[in-house]
Length: 324
Image (cartoon, rainbow, N blue to C red; front, side, top):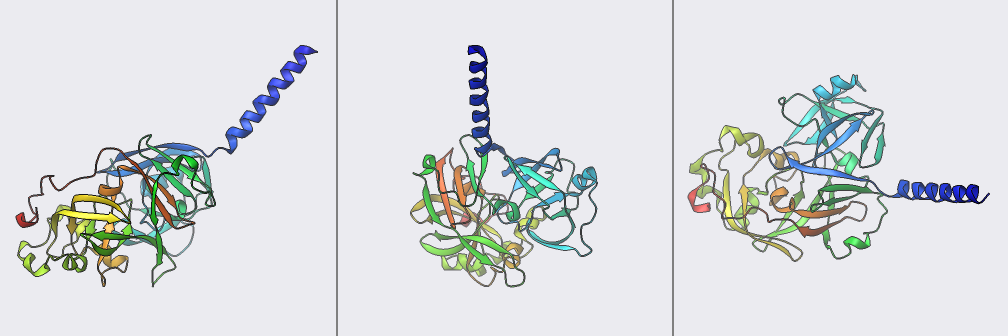
């Protein structure tokens, strides 16, 4: 009887431990790949893992055509689906897998867009706001892990010392889609900035650059950027790089930074072209741990690993010397 009692006690403890583990939020690795993007694995309909970019400026989650074929997914509705992000606005074919799994979370019956192939060595898809904004997202840069908490979770005590700032939602005029913005200062000039973890650089439009004292007319002779970067910077001249820029978020400062200046198409797609605007990307934020509280509209920055790109980095050959 003593052995039976001990066995029952052991089983009770084991079951309790299993239940406790089941309630703990899961986390999984992410990595930096594909020219500085954040990448993590997802499974779709139990298949995978597939390599997805983490993108806070993509309105929808997307898969590339080779994933759709592998999963044998058919079109889920007759009309095309409009997707904002990925440096573009695209009309794509919609599909509706049964489930998408990431970091211990199951997202069921989500409608995803299908992108045409971009090459055999590219990612498998993009994890957009339709998934990310459902959770309190924590990106631990030191451990290189992503963790998804319920949206009503308070900032865990382990992150209580992290610095925080306002994260502001803003809808588009044309579609019921919203994106997230940061109140940023560039050289002490306030500029509304799109929070874009899918971008590998920070960029100002010329409306913002003019407020910083850089006159667009002074640099028009340099012409448009080379074709290899026109998918990001556009074809409009000029597109230049400015060094020595101070970037500040409510007291958090990155000194002596390099930023791009261009009237890139992304500013038009996000209805930012008529105002001084910026895109705040991974060259500044990618080396920080981040906690993104979409429900309470807060962004928290934790410890930095390494340092962001600085103005001492070599300029690209096509950047004007006076700005480098």
